[in-house]
Amino acid sequence: METGENFTALNYSAHAIESMKEVVQRLPPHFVQSINAIRIVSDMLRRSVKFILPNCAELLDPLHVSQAHIDLLKLPFPLVAFEAPWQKTDAKDAGYLDHYKSTRRIALCWEPGATPPQLAHLNVILDRFPQGGVFILPISWLDVIETWNVGIGGAFVPYENSLAAVDQAQVSPLSARAMEALNSAGLLPKKPQQFAAEPFILQPEHFEAVIARSDRETGFANIMNDTRDEGMAVVQACAVLNCENVATA
Image 1 (cartoon, one colour):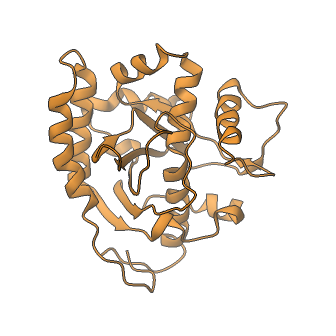
Image 2 (spheres, one colour):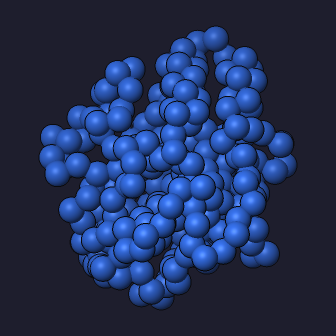
C-alpha cells in the first residue's frame, strides 16, 4: 500500500502461514474444528491481497474517527490482509491475550461472498445484516512465546453502520463487559463512541476452554477486545483507500 511513504515489506503473512503449520501440530487431537479452521485461515491468508500499514496502523488520528470514516468502510478486495508493526511503549490489552505483548499484527478481512465453504456457517450473520459487511480476524505475533496466534474468533462489522456516543444506560451486557475490561486497563476514552460489530467464533474448542473459566459473555467480550485494534486499523485503512487513489504494493 502506498500513501506517499515508503514501507518495507514485512512478510508477516508468509511467516504466520509457516507458524500455523506448527501450531496445528501442537493442538490437542480433539480440537478438530479449531485445527481445520486454522488450516483454512492459512489458505485464506495465502490468497489474500496484502497491504502494509504504518506502526499501529495510525493512518488517521483514532481519537477523531468520524461517521465520514465509517461510511468509507468497504474492503478494496473481497479477501484482504492488513499487516502492521505494533510498537507501543505503553502497550496494554484488555482481552484474553492481555498478558502477551504483540508487536506484529495482521488483520485478515473478508466479505461474506469470500467465505470458504468450510466456514459458510459464519454467513448466518447476513440474516441480521443483509447489506453485508466485513469479517475481521486478528492474527498476532506473541513476543513472549515467539509464535503467531490465530484469534479464537473475530468481529463482523456491517457496511451500513453508525458511529454514536455510548449510552451507558442502554449498552448490552456484552458491550458492558468489554467496556469494563477496557476501563480497567485504562483504555476507555472519556467520551467513548461505538459502531455496530458482532463477535464470531472461529475456534469452537478454544472458545469452550476459555468460557469454562468464566462465562459466554466474558468469552465474547474477550473476542471483541482482542479484535479492537485490528477493527480500528481496518476502518482507517479503508477510509484512506476509498478516498485516495492508492495502489497495492
